Structures are given as structure tokens and as C-alpha cells.
Image: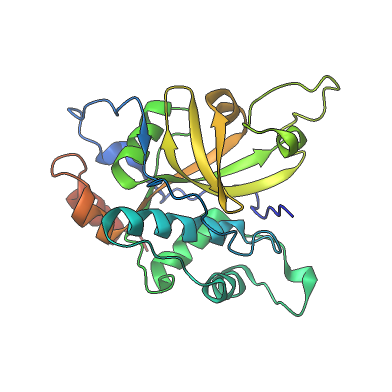
Length: 245
């Protein structure tokens, strides 16, 4: 069973924009990047049972970061469910409360509370239509956390693509529903996300049609070990964070 669970995009004028913290001298991202470490199974993190994709995506980010910096860490389902309960109002005794979550709110809660002992320093948004900026975010930070308005046509596609099924309805954005995923890899023609425990490719045409939010997640451990000096203005970002109330 493939559950979804991302609610509509929520915006906040205080949200940091990634471009501000990228130096003008930053070289173009490499033509391809893959942080998956050839991991074949990431676990569904309950998204095969409940609409907790906004939390599962964070769990998959932690897997990628830990696998590339030390030893892969997979949060237990109890931790994932607890976050879904605390941050999204889910009550396992009341199915009516399984209503999904808002990415912006979930990330704000993660910064405040941590997730399974893992902290989030901040998040800064690349422009979803600027694929160079998106690829730069994946290259620098191990991936991006995105929101998709999935069409019904995606239910049967091996590679997600923007293809008209012929009836003019199945490829309508959001006709299946909203979904949150973590994207740790790309090449010149596609992006690869983690969803329902496995890797899933989407074409750039699919991304440009159905992706409506993207967030670069700044893990303190990842930045300390992986981001080279001079490639990201962390000092300015921290100063800006201090001004947000």
C-alpha cells in the first residue's frame, strides 16, 4: 500500500532562501551526484500504513547523512510515529486524525525538538524551478526535501514522468495527492527520491510539473564533516536565524 500525506504548501516570509548563502564564485554542481551509498532498502517508515510521508522523508534524510558520514542509522518506527503524533496530531486510536502534515511546520518542529536525537540547524529553500540551484543543494547537503502534487498516472509508472495517458485527466497535478520525499541523487535528466522504502526516479519534466516546494536541510553533523569551506555562508545564515522569532 502506498500512502501519501503531504498537505498543501504553507509559506512564511521568514523562510530562508538558499541563494543568499551561496557564494557567487561557487562552481556549477557536478553533472551527477548520488548520496545513496548503494543502499537498496530504506524502509517504508510506516508510510505503507499511514499518511506520515512528511516524517518518513526526514527519517530517510537521516539515513543518507549517517551512511555517508559514519554508519547508517535507521530510526525505529516508534520514533517516526511519535513525531507524526506530536507534530501532525495523529492519534493511532482515531483513524480520522491520519490527515498528513505540512512540510514547513514539520521542519520547524524538527528544529525545535530534534528527531530521534538528531538535530536540524536550519532549512533554506532553493527555487524549485532553478534546477541548477536544486542540484547544488543536493550536492552540498546530501539531498533536498520536497513536496509533490502527484498525478494518478504516477501510480503505474516505473519512472515518474509527465506523460498524458490520453484521457486528459490522469496526469493532472494533485489528482492522486500530495507527497513528501527526500531526494539524494540526480543526473542530467532526472532526480531520484526515496519513497515507500525504495529509490524512485523522476524526470526533470516531472519535477518541473509536479514539484511545488523544496527545502535544503542543514544537519550540523553533515555540514561539519562534508561541506567544504567557502562553499556556503554559514555565518550569515546563523545571523539571519537569530533574527527570526
